[in-house]
Length: 167
Image 1 (cartoon, rainbow, N blue to C red):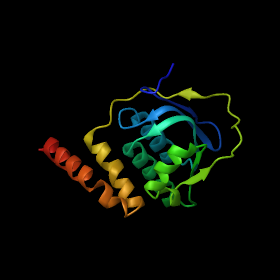
Image 2 (cartoon, rainbow, N blue to C red):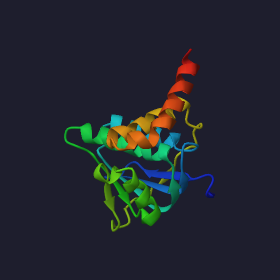
Image 3 (cartoon, helix red, strand yellow):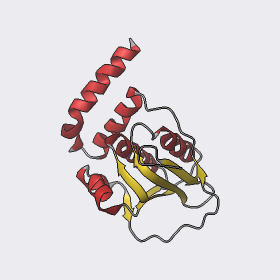
């Protein structure tokens, strides 16, 4: 069903909180469906999300930027929403902390299994465009100013690519 190269994102959208399970690696090649789902749920007024990382093998900076963007949107709601990362594991926890996102996201290691019998797999979407990857990296800088130096070259490269595409 899924291997490390092609992760699956399973969602339980009728629960509170909404639950997303990630299997495999989450990265710029495969996170569009996740981003689209989260955007839709936030637009519908959903405020509480748990992302389950038990089977997640890793994340890249684009996926981390998508998480940061979701958390920023949820924080701007009245009342504030919450994005909880459950069972990150040591490697994924280190990735979150290296970018200072632990201050933006709620991290849990002991949430019980969520009562949802209706998990549905998100359809695979196209690979993220340069514009979407650029926005994800800008989210990382907005979430933590210290990330500006880490991603300045990536942001500059992507901005040049986006500018060229728009001409």
